[in-house]
Image (cartoon, rainbow, N blue to C red; front, side, top):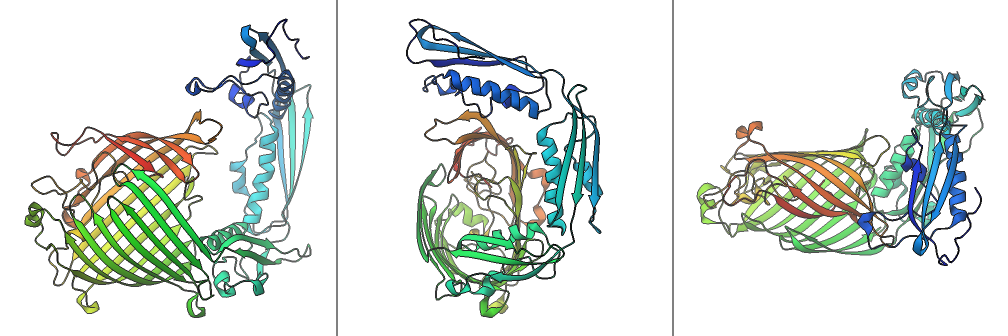
Length: 603
């Protein structure tokens, strides 16, 4: 296609009015339009954007690119032609006509394995992206090689080499694929060395405790990435690189070099936000890293909203006394102004944490809390005999639990999950004025559907608290509540479960709630100055609060379907949810729907 001549007396500037692709049957127009040089006209939703400039040379490049794209997709006889129509006011309409022709069929696929004693590669056949009888494409051929190049280093064979050969017959439109995989020797981790130790304030022991590729273990590339993630999670380092050393071809022991760069010793954080429940909110934080050396981190945080405030201090001492345990101290002063009560509390928690296999982290320690509830309606006090307003409650308790965090991105997660199983025991032996046993489980899971940006997310929260010894009923500030923007979204904040005679929440000793949510991108983009995508969500929430653990009844769960929009910003997802309660508690006062403004996903 040559450059089309400009029409007589046409405007100096040509703009693209429309761009259509016809004749394509197997390859979608969306695939063909990807990475075009020609800027396409904006969506009707973005009516404020003007028509883009049309340049014939860009169109010529795009036609050539489409031809090459078809060859990579196995269409070696495809033709692509363009027609350009000039209209009034310099408006240009472009039609691209495609004739795909026959595609190349894979008639034979051989994979020859050399070495790999002990490696079970038969299971990979079920994962082949390319098989006999299917259309040959460059991408699926490359992905077949990557399948072995990614699998073997994660199972003890980092020296794998893959060579491929394709016998292509363009006349018969057939392809024979031959792959030779040389696994190399089965390898093991060697000595782990931290580089430039003299420049670091963080102790070597604290770094090595976060490295999971231990000497003598089978080499696994995933362990390098896991170790990197663990070191970043300490918030001590701005850069973490783990590199296998170059060793002779026959050597099976591979030492690992760890190179880290420490963050600035001090940093300041500040943030503002808004939500329909907590209204205006502000957060200020100060972090002091490597306090007194030794990798210690001191973090001060204060937060304010219409629901209260909190001033919190967290101190972390990794590898305390040279052991494999981290010491964590948390202390805070808190005030909450909730629909059913107000309280002020002061607490401190000291615990030891330790990493165990499979990404689990166990912890145990002691907590001490002083809390005073007040602004409690008289109707609530009638129902809750164990709650005394203005009384200072003292709880001294042991804590123990386990956490597991494998989320790939905490702002916009696509894969992985979080498990937090926590238990408390407050007894007279510990000097506690309030005695109880409490157990809570918070489970979250994220699963990307294929290689798309569609993500299926799920959450379950289950909690029980049981008074023991001299305590007949735990006070209201220790009870469970549910409902609201980060809970069952079809109901007001805390309003699920038992209520007093005036319809105000009084909480319960058991809670069960969960959500399942589909998150997906929308084919709409913000103006180029923002350059961020809009996403949608469809969800179903369910849950309830029960007076006592023995009252827990799955048949009493309240459900809430809904939908929402998200703007994926640099600080997370910002958007709006609309949720509909399937069973309103009070049809006279409860709204038939709830609208929540959110910052970040609900879970």
